[in-house]
Length: 210
Image 1: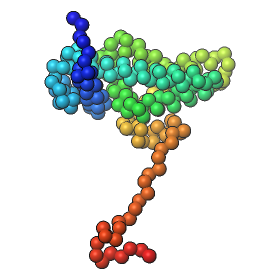
Image 2: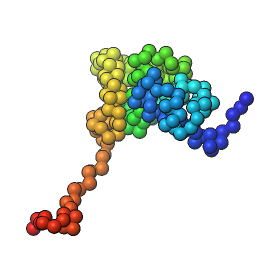
Image 3: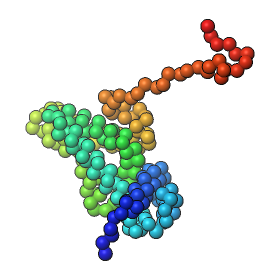
Image 4: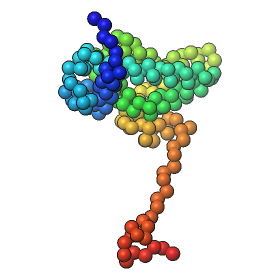
């Protein structure tokens, strides 16, 4: 039986997605219950089954959306460059930007990888594989031009895995040093200037400097 989408049902789905992202990233799949997600979203627990087929379905929906977003971002970044070294740098920087936009993504992905991926649906599992093999594909495609020299794709893959772990540990990548490390072109606004208390705020007996 087809389910008709309404603005209200879309709002409920989005609230459940937001709740799942926050809780899965912070506590892991096994550390989160259906009632925890529903309570955070402010909806009935039965709606998780209705919209996603259960907690596992919600997890897969979250990852599928994030992986699709990451594939688009990295693919576009790589297509804009010609040299393999530039492609590799563009890929890494794109991943850092994805983590800045979706800070929950590296943590959820890493947790599921460490769990062996047993909860991942086949389509999600394939997208995970494509994403993780992005750097390897760039290195292996360079065999003809040798732009990267004798670099071993396994070393690149391990470096990429370490980056994902750092992003997961950083949590809020948009505010941390991790994004700046992998994407030095980012421009962050300067901190607001500190203003001392006015004479009225300082109270009696406190003199302002001349």
